[in-house]
Image 1: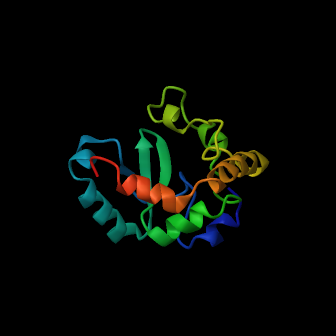
Image 2: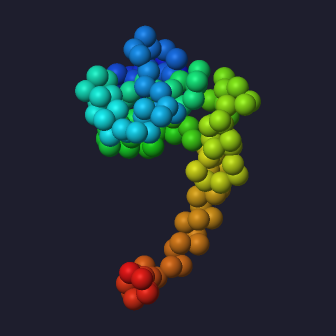
Length: 142
């Protein structure tokens, strides 16, 4: 991340660049009471909390809606392409397969992302949203 990233989100620091204790998201204790852990992280850190995705795999978790939106809407500072991130992650890390690059709009950036997005937008432009709403509303099991 660039030095200007920290000015994009107040209180943000790149994973690995904080002295604050990190909440381990992979533990039985977290799984037993995730809401309590989220509450504690918000109280201690605000809307951006230092976490561990797996042992020795630091990350910053966006807990606030507005902070998450700012991150999602700023691909220059927060790219969806995980290749830079995975350079520092061990090959045997249990969360790595879920975050590896994929050839789709979600896990790409730049011109590749625009190419995927334009194909998706073109396909969805042909969908009658009112007709779709009626079909879904009339579906069994609703």
